[in-house]
Image (tube, rainbow, N blue to C red; front, side, top):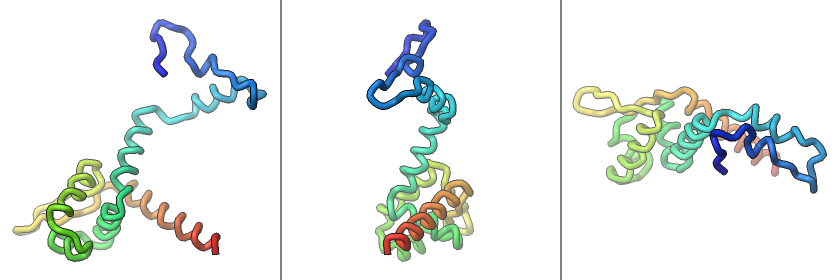
Length: 133
């Protein structure tokens, strides 16, 4: 919902939920503490880049040891064109980068936050699976 820049109040200031909310300042408190929209958009882009199993595997693999396209292709059992697609997405999201080593482009992780996020998701998944048993 767009607000009029000349308006003194925003929809957040005017929102009320009479059916549930007995605290009219709750939405304003939450809105004041939310990260800026551009930060959330960046977070969404990073999560989207890591959101495909092949891309998560690529990041996990190059975290262990940098690998070239040929090695990644064998590891993931994926054609070079399909792998290149996933590598481009990860590189454009700032997660990995190719470095020329001799005749080969070897992929390295460059975003420790992305790596930490993937590890956190994997740990959470393990904990949830353990709790459901």
